[in-house]
Amino acid sequence: MSGRLRRLGRVLAFAGYFAKQLVMANWEVVADLLTPGSRLQPGIVALPLRCRSAGEITLLSDLITLTPGTLTIDVSEGRDVMYVHGMYAPDADEFRAELTDLETRMLHAVRLDSPQEARP
Image (tube, rainbow, N blue to C red; front, side, top):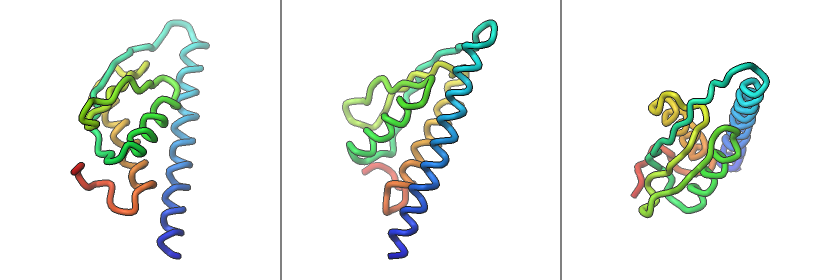
């Protein structure tokens, strides 16, 4: 039973983290729309994936696309790279790091094993 409680705790912690990210992203887009000028600096990054299953890739893609200002464009044929567009991505490395953090937290919430494991 303690394993189920730990997993539930990880899922709830991730839900709280994602809710906070969602609010912050919405605020960034609304603030940009309501203030003079524009801070848009769009960019596309290739995100190396640690997701192992189609379900994990789909969940990550959905989480990215749900976040205002980001959109999953494609996943490579080998399912090891995801291409993501960001409306506010002046620094590709920083944007990629934010996406990697999201993936790490998601994997920690949904996997029973360690999300740090490399893809097979």
